[in-house]
Image (cartoon, rainbow, N blue to C red; front, side, top):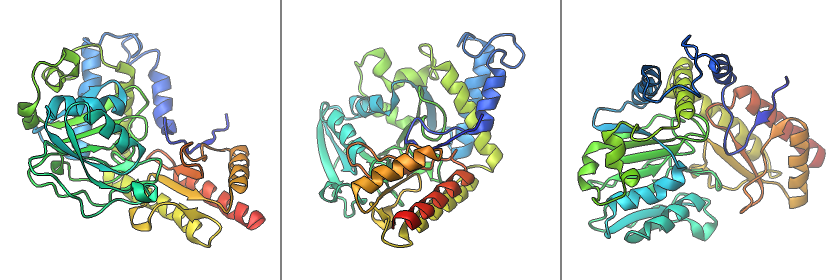
Length: 357
């Protein structure tokens, strides 16, 4: 079978070797005679899966025992509400508005307290990361979206929030580069961009924050429940967690997050250099804030963009249409996108420019 190149924003491309391993083990996990899809989540075989996944997440991100690692359900969108429900408690939290996903988080937080928008780039269509943030005194936490898939912007340096916990939605750039996890009180990420398939959400929570968490919440909406039970209060998304384990093993095999980052920066540089070669393509994000995960760009007119997307699709380059809210084009080049795939994209872009420029 001839594989096409998947540039969709998500669910995103997975490494072929990971999918082949999952395929080989689907009917018989580690010789036990049962599939990962049917074993009990209380069995020792699944204990090995989830414990290995957690251990490898900890190792790859350099997490200490001060942090709990959770595998939850409901996507990042559920975390938009869970975070203020647990930690805002009618007070004030600071949010930085960098795009559609940040706006969704802000909307949910307003249900549980006061939101101070500490900075926003909405004035220029979310094409940059705002500076000179105005934090409020006594904030419960500061929330950022580490990478915005629609605008193609990414925090290059995280804000200094002092003693106020920094909370980050890293759904679209988790493990794309080395970070200092100790900067954060809470990190959350839907798996379906960089670390697995849709169906599981990684939450990394500094344990001391549980002392500030609200009481009286329903059982499943309390972080305390999931930390106390090690993500096993109810039946977890077993197959998705198994796939996260395989992905963590794959990241290790590439040389870890530092090695992944070097490859990601090479991939991004190749696409951006192709865009910047002349004025046929135009990047939409401010250069210093450009994402290494989601490359957004425009062509001279919308008719040419439609033709670009049609011809790219015919050439096996899938998912290059920009988000419906902004149009244009977007190449999502997550961890699992190969250098070969990016080279094919760059070649196509250069050829298209010669024909239509």
